[in-house]
Length: 169
Ligand SMILES: Cc1cc2nc3c(=O)[nH]c(=O)nc-3n(C[C@H](O)[C@H](O)[C@H](O)COP(=O)(O)O)c2cc1C
Image (cartoon, rainbow, N blue to C red; front, top):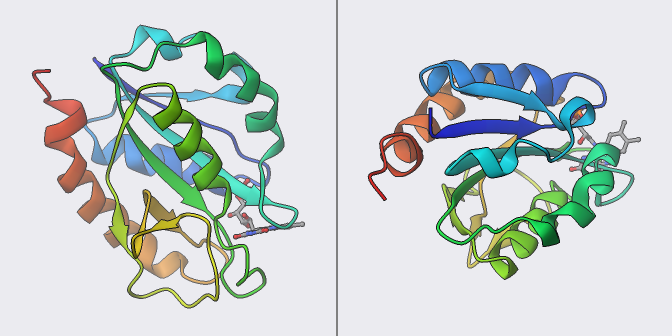
């Protein structure tokens, strides 16, 4: 396989979602970065990164730890799709912000980020994860909209499949 998922999770939401996304993407491998760190990221041509937002717009703690390793990884030629978790009701001013930090770092290290999605269907005031009116990846809200998760994943997986799974370049 040329593509794998790397995620971290505090309460288990991102873990569950990562497994669902793997299933939707022909069962690609899933790595918990709390266990593996960034070690295997370089082995894959294309990637899916999963990150949740904690403590008022911060990256989940395991992501904060591997953050510094990004500077050693050559992302040129890699396509990366990002999924993010957040709670739009309790944190409407920092909704899924952490995705943006990952996005900015990936771009600055030469990656191409794919899989932007519409903000339609979400209610929040502000999110750093929005650029030009779109989320920089798939946003899932397991706290308030878990009933929409499966459908959102299905649609997104179909959209990114050709770019990261069956990509010829
Ligand atoms: C103490 C606390 C702080 C949180 N801060 C934010 C936040 O700033 N922005 C946001 O969108 N969600 C926030 N959340 C919601 C989590 O991102 C959400 O529950 C997510 O699904 C957790 O995924 P994980 O357990 O897999 O890490 C917070 C949740 C808790 C409990």
